[in-house]
Length: 291
Length: 284
Image (tube, rainbow over all chains, first blue to last red; front, side, top):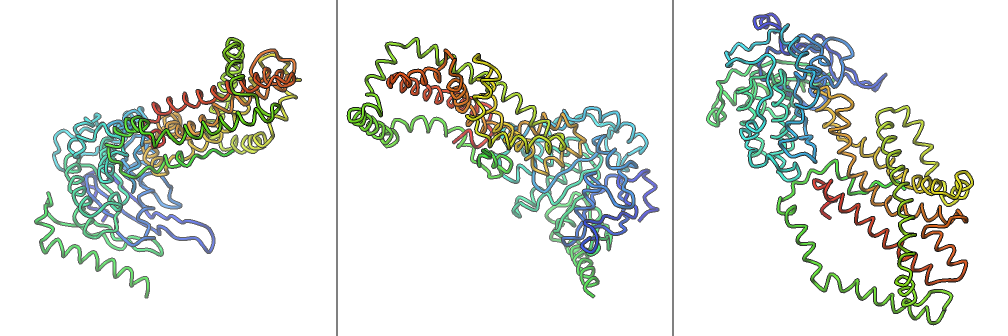
């Protein structure tokens, strides 16, 4: 999966023979062993695999929170640190990580006050990358203007909660606020680390729908870590299956299902076939390792 | 004196959803509650009991305690004397508090940003904290004389450590994931400090202030008592009066000190409620 990418210019994400080792000597663990991955702009990509397969490590490398021991990570053609400096990366961690003393609205607008020099840096990078999605999104701005956060909050169903404190709203609403905060950056790459894992199933499904709505509108590249097979199929264009010991990519499966994906689709056979396929790959990776 | 108030440590992981009604109702409720006898009666009974005990002790052992009416009359007849001395002591305490606060806060910020400074300063601060201040006070009087300076220094020193430790703990206790979110935006040190670390430290800071406000008076009084040549302040009034066996003046001064302590605590609490309206501790 490398040659086909060139059509759209610089890929949103590019990992080339990335190694990441934790610890030293005999107790060292290979979190990522020779990982290659290319993600074209505008794709929704899920990373799935059992714990210890390095999916969170991969995500932290992309978000610039860690550096690879060997190999290269590129976000729109530049190292993650530069992409962060240009505010091109939005992070949604496992917990909402809101500031408890700020209202929801002020929580999601704070990023606009931070790192104000990022605009110019971003123009330079995205200028090189000529990042333009194949879809003719109506005048997708290369140096995005600050979106109206109130509007975005209303869209995410947080209109009523806008002026409340994080402690005054439910866990699902807090996670939604965290997603809005990340989308508010108009990130070129949105990295999400199991953002729904702490929520109950009903909340999770409605948040998945809302995430897709927002993504549909803002069309950013998404890197989504999950350990739920159905979540991965539901959301993604591409599912990356990973395996542990050492952490590696064992399969890349394109999910060719129409969008928008509604409840009807999730009952259909082709949806379940994708689920079965991914489960099978996960199982095979597991057994292959045991053998 | 590691003042990691459990309420403050909860600040970081305040994850429980709280029904909004709690925020709007809590205050009126707690005010209304004082009307009910079950709330104020125990305190009243206890106070009366202690007063009776005091009066009995004062009659049986006149050198132990002065009778309450004598304390009262001393207070009313020499009201200006007590006010003047109280103002002197409060001035010393407040001045020392201000000095200690600024020094400790600045140092806490610096040590949280510069690890090598933390390693250099913190052990010394701990040693300073376990050294009894009463023992240092006379030496400081020798060094700085009988004026206000040694009092400011001692009051400042006594306030310094709790503020330093708590503020440093608060600055350092921002949840990892919050830091990661702002790190991916490449937030600058100052931005992180101003928008995230300092607000995060406020509950810890206030936990320290609740201890340190009354403590600053202790510092001022200790300093006054150590400087035998002092002419003003409630500490001086107490040591002078007790050397002349004037128990009513001693206890009237002590009473004034206690009231001052309560007022200071009340002041901190009021400010805390305003500043930390978002935090659990402001609603208890």
